[in-house]
Length: 495
Picture (tube, rainbow, N blue to C red):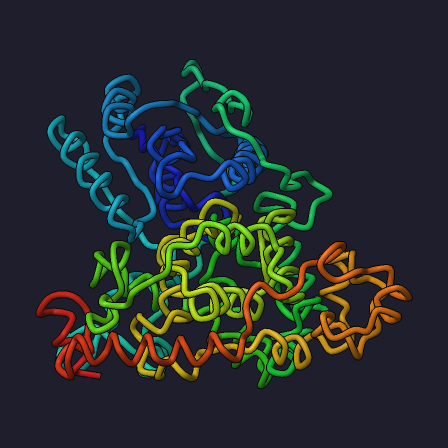
């Protein structure tokens, strides 16, 4: 009976996982997870204690799912190329299967793994499963160039062929005497949850079981019917599935198919959010250096301020703008934030505080349970108006007061995450600094003492942002409105 190692990475599920389904049909399976220190250390660029802790919960759930089918999860620690090559020799594996990934790090790592395994005669298979389509980067223009604008990409994405859905295997056969290893604790890895609630009763219980239940509940609740109208409600207008998609606890293909089957106008709008994931994955494949600098060359000349005090106030949720502060505090408590609030806090950092978008990108990656290199980078470049999108910068100058008044008009979200403002009358909640001393006394919130006054004036900083972007574009010249390299310029021209 042939033996296949199934290497799990960010696809922590048994339903609709081509690598696992194929291996189970072929013979004996060794489900494996490798702890790689390069991805764990929070001192490195994308390390995160909270996200690693949530992943551990997902791995425990995965082990349970595998055990129900006669298998189990095998755990090792080290460099994947060394671990996999050694394990393949130990069990006599003929094949190694895993779900393809798109980040520059993952592609370099997988290249080393492939070389090590093929050198000893083991076949290596990078398989679909991370996106809705098999390979999001294969969706290109009629000229064969990459899409650099979402709308035409989505139109092509909607027409792209989908693979068949792979049900979870009923039975798994694993080597009987192989040392399984043991899942470490977060403390074993030298990490901390940093105060983020990661337990089974948290806002995001980890694992495939919880993810599939959330998907079922979302679809059965009728929330898709009004999704076009409610999606921007920070107090509960979204599906809250993003951590489960990031870690592969929910299959994006299954999600898309079930949303299509639901068949409403809101469902069609929700598909945009699914398509954005594949789009940003494709951008990262075609333009991997977006993780190092702005995609648009003309905005690489932007002069960012370096103000540690302002940056820290933003991180701590102490800016004096309630919606911004609510979002930043939720991030530290739950490891998550609604999309509308992400856009608001991102615009505030880059266009009100004039701090480098990469500082925000790194901070989000430290805390987000759904922190994903492609999506996080794409979203930060989008809100900073420096990425693969044609909208002019002045359309992305979010007014935090107006955003709050429009999307949290009753203050449900703000009052939850900024308790100092819990008793402020709704008419003052978006601009609490305008309360009289009497109003502050009645609300039990003295501005400047219990809650900060605004650290900047939005109107003034908006004008300054316009001048900064205008100056950067003028410095770069009219011919630099594209990404890095000749391929990037060709792709931009084609769209």
